[in-house]
Amino acid sequence: MYGKAMRDTVVVGDVHGCGAELRAMFRRLARREATPRVVLLGDLLTKGPRPDLVIEEIIARRRDGWRIDLVCGNHEPRALAAIRRAGPDGDARHLPPRLGEMVDLLADADLLEEAEAILREAMRTNFVRGRMPYQWTAVHAGIDPTRGFDRTPPRVRMTIKSADGEPDWWWRYDGADGLLIVGHRPLVNPLMLMRGSGRPAVVAIDTGCVYGGALTAYSLGTANFIVVPSEQPRLFNFRRRISERPNSSAWRAASAARGRTLVR
Ligand SMILES: [Mn+2]
Image (cartoon, rainbow, N blue to C red):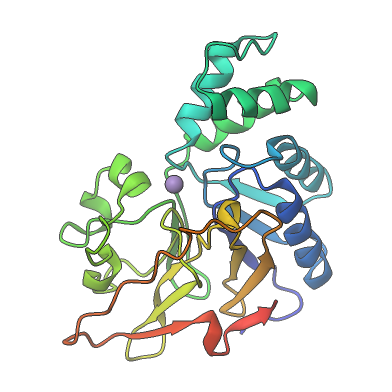
């Protein structure tokens, strides 16, 4: 599907401060291709133990010539607000505990300025779109399928998530806006919804790394998932299962468990 001369684009799901897993993912990608293009789907720094390493990895790989695009997640504004509130000295005393920890970790690594710059950059980008091998859009959470991509407000694209027990938005998406690659909703396995033609319409790759699941990426060139197991303790309530597909649907659901995992 893509030749040696063509640069692959790889979209990486919610990192949430899992710097070690992001480093492992980048090493995996580097073995496939010297300078891949990467899109990070957002929620980069909050919750996890190594936000400093996330920043370091992005900076280091860009220095190596990688193109890394950042999409804004719903956690980017609160992470940026916390860093600004802490000020140049990284005073985290008046922050909620988890955001305070994030600021402390970044301050200890002397990366507050760099983190602020990266968050500001991410916040300028609601989605990233490409046309190879067919139209795809990387966006943090998804769309309102009754309105379509263009009429879904940018904030909704960053935050849409079904309530527990409710079907996810993607079951009602007809594919009119091309392939949508999303994170935000933790799943046990990455999800790929195909059309009858065999072309993917939705790829969902938040596999709950910070909850002990995995960090998952999707290669547009090969239509495969790349999965790095989490190093975090697995939460007992992690197993939020993939919602059932409607009976009337013409869609076929395929998960990583069914032969689409490139490497585990
Ligand atoms: Mn999110």
